[in-house]
Amino acid sequence: MSVAASAGVVLGLLAAANLGSLALAGWRLRRRVRLPVLHREPVSIVRPVCGVEEFSEETLGSAFRLEHPDYEILFCVQREDDPVIPLVRRLIAENPGVEARLLVGDDRISGNPKLNNCVKGWEAARHEWVVLADSNVLMAPDYLEHLLSAWRADTGLICSTPLGSRAVGFPAEVECAFLNTLQARWQYAGEAMGLGFAQGKSMLWQRSFLNAHGGIRALGAEIAEDAAATKLVRAAGRHVHLVASPFEQPLGGRTLRQVWDRQVRWARLRRVTFPLFFAPELFIGAAVPMLLGMLAAPHPLAGALAVAVLWYGPEFWLARAKGWPLTLASLPAMVVRDAMVPLVWAAGWTTGRTVWRGNTVAFDGDVSRPVTEP
Image 1: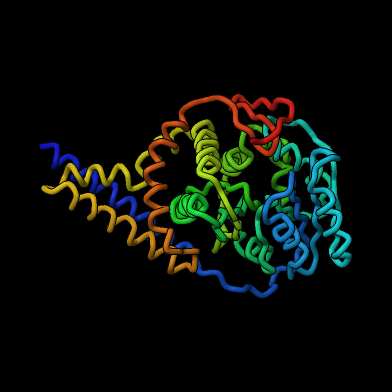
Image 2 (image 1 turned 120 degrees about the horizontal axis):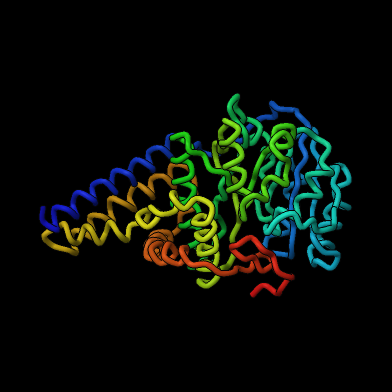
């Protein structure tokens, strides 16, 4: 078989996988709608916080405006001198109608600083249903209803991917392109095939289930708590399910270095925790297919352009159909993202340390003393 024919066969397989993932995600995802309050179970929301970000007041404040009839908020911070503490205390004081507490302390149960920060919240939570929610998740008024409505008889955990929004500047548009029509799309496609993976942004647990399988400390078995959660749920014979529509994470401004560092950190985490699933990530963007299109077509430029239309047209359709953010910068951001995919994938096979919220984390699971985040 000639080089052109071989390239065409591989390209056909990749195109089928790409279009299949978009179709599965399109079928599984729903355009966001406002849900009425149908579930009235009391819920504890554990929110680890560390430092003040661009949208901290809005994202943290959104937890006080939920329509759910009975819930508590447990803000968890590691150190007494954290600059986010005055903000949290002010939000609690301004919303006396919502039960909320600030818990300070650091339980070093693992090499994951976020998980360590959550332990005291889990142990202080009063309710059977517990949500672990990152500080940069913007909670819609029906946030808890979406989580509770996704629970099924075979569920062990409900999660949501982050939906990147409010990008300011081109690098932030690139991060949106990574988060939305690439990573969220593949995660929803995987869940549709019965291969649901946990996502640490929003996790709804049934307290008795997790406690029966080692409690929150069991999530320290991996360097990433969502990877440990995935393995724990599967070992218990249950499934990780996703909400029908992901929750928003406003991004604001980014630098290309910040985007690169985040993607490499997440790539290393995926490689360490799920190497067999990480290995094919080299092929998820359009870079390799465009190269194959150039080899397979009589005219290389025409082959590359045909692949670009085949890849980005359906991707745009998915974002538009689901009401996800699209701007004039979205297409060039997708192109830059896909040019980065092979480089991020290669960097994901390296080892070393990364800085997360002022903590230097080694990929052997150790945590050194706090340092200043660059």
